[in-house]
Amino acid sequence: MENRNFQLDTEWNVIHYPERPQGFGILIIGDDRHFVDSNTSFWMQNEGKSLLLQTLLDAGYTVFYSNLYGKNWGSEKAVRLSKRLYQHVIRSEILNEKIHILAEGMGALVTLKLIREMEDCIRSVVLLNPILSLNHQLELEKDRKFFYKKMVKELSESFNQSGEQMINKIAEVDAPLNSIPIIPMKILQVLSDSRAYKQSQFLNELSLKWKENNVPISLCYMVPEKRTQMSFPILEFLKKYENI
Image (tube, rainbow, N blue to C red):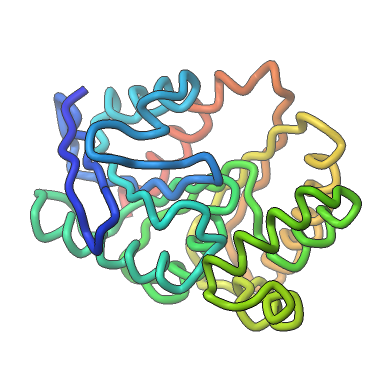
């Protein structure tokens, strides 16, 4: 697996190069366990993610992503760095300027903001088990005090505000949900536990609103046993929007 690690604004980033490039790029925006350092990354070390990454490379995609300040929870500085990474890659690599985005978990919060700011540069979006609202996520965590306090602490650090300020102003920093630009989007939700089922109810409500706004979104639920087969619907979806 050939890759190049480099720094932007003190954060490590990586570009993975396919053996037979076909000219399209994928920006990955990771979840809370995501990381990149000078030598490796979560997507290189985690068995499931490494398998998906290799499948994307075998299909000819150039894949790139950033550490994005760790657990950023959709902060504006993470959005700015994502845009800067995109500009760096487009300048330095031979790629189509319209990219795909593949985001997992909290990475969806950055993605929703990027869609609004980079609409003309995004070809399609795939979201894996997405967290789409800080406010909704906080509500889910309220019955688990340790995780609730942990999330508030991480939000405080990411947005540089006190925990109390974050709770009071959560709506002001949350990702926009009511309407998003018309970009093809596929959501894959693995129904692994009760929290995933609660999240699926929220996804269903949102998908109805997006359909009213003519957003071309498809929602797919998977059982945990099928998780390793996730690459097939992802590749099929990406290919569908490469002829436009």
